[in-house]
Length: 190
Image 1 (cartoon, rainbow, N blue to C red):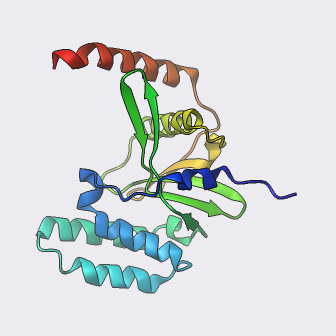
Image 2: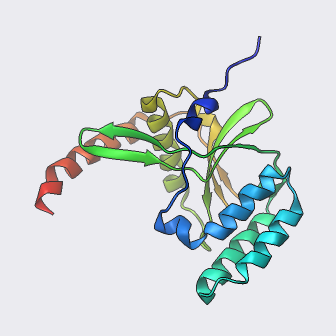
């Protein structure tokens, strides 16, 4: 009997992210997605690097090139990810809305993957990565997607580290809920 993939439920709302962070590295993320869609096709990275050369803002051009070059040299690029449409998943805590926007949603063999990428030229703090994974798991759960937390990962392209956890710590959920209450209380005064 075939196991129904919860990742299919993420396909409800396919969107393109317009966040500032992704806007600065949009071209490199597009190149990474095309690379995986092409079955780990290195020609897609070369095409993306060529397209990046036409970016008028030098710092943005250099940043996108760095991300693609770092990705191409990483162990992460060797993984056999089969991309699924990226979706935005949301959950609310009172008046606070949490939006989940991973860089990649994929299948790897029989496993579902939700992947966040650290594309900065600096090491990702391990605790920040794990808390992000835990909150992502909570948001997926609230949205109605039952997926093991081990399928959610934060890949640090700068160091090559893949951050995962085996369980969500109750303290993370408690802190998140408390912080949402504080935000709700303070928001009208800002």
